[in-house]
Image 1 (cartoon, rainbow, N blue to C red):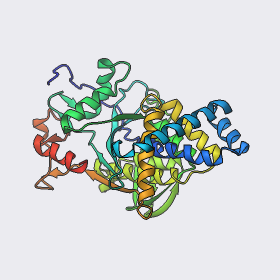
Image 2: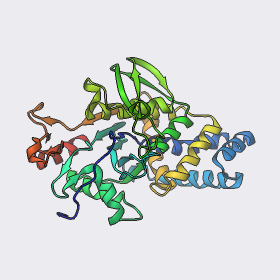
Image 3: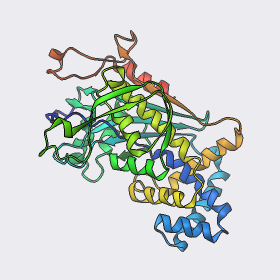
Image 4: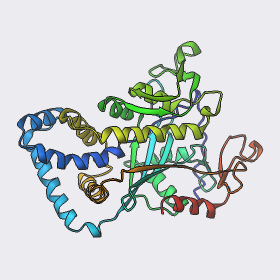
Length: 370
């Protein structure tokens, strides 16, 4: 299906604010498991009080949620063999920042994520924001923007449909996360630990909160950020800079490097969230879910996935959940590459990626998420 009306004429007047990952998905498992943890602590009025106050819910509401979730968990566990073991998510990271309200809301982060509780793997695939779609005459990161016209109440539905068609791949849920959402989530868990594989310096990192319509002094608009190699704890602001950086003069300034860093933060956040036991932190995570993602994925869905997750762990006590990070291969660096960078004269002077072979593109996605 071609839609000739989708012609991207949007141009940035500033460096692209690449970012946002989107990671509450991780909370998905944690919040499901929380119900069981709470059940063991439910006799502690102190625990209940701390959680409820932190989540902004009353004690009765909290206990009703726990009771309902536990009843569902029991019912789901009794039919565990009939529950699906794989769940596919589309994560969209939007680039909306204060001071830049005049710019279109694009998705500079687009990631497919699968939880597979047959083998205990969480697999991710980052889609390049500059992937040009001939059928829609625009880059893939603009599909969400056009979705606001096509589906005003749920613009994420449009990129879901487009990517499902491209990859012949069923997406169960689509999660949209903005910069402020991600920053808040990392702050709730008091930062993340990341083993930085390669040191780099970005001399032109955009300073947030500056009104670019009024300020044009590069000394005010940008700052230098640097990261050393090795394990380090990052607060929310530092983690976002690590993910968003795009002006390093070495390979760390490429889209591929940014995608890898996003996936590293995703894994670090998952690891941190699975260790949370403090009732106040748990309450804040629950409040975050209620405010931002309850409409995207219901409590019932989370409990179902959590049930399968817990069942896997109970049967594989020595096997931890493992992460697999994937990226699309690029021709001619890889002779079997599924995307390529056409010369500018072929792409109306736009630097883009295009799909080299649609059949191989589809096969690649299905091989990753088999």
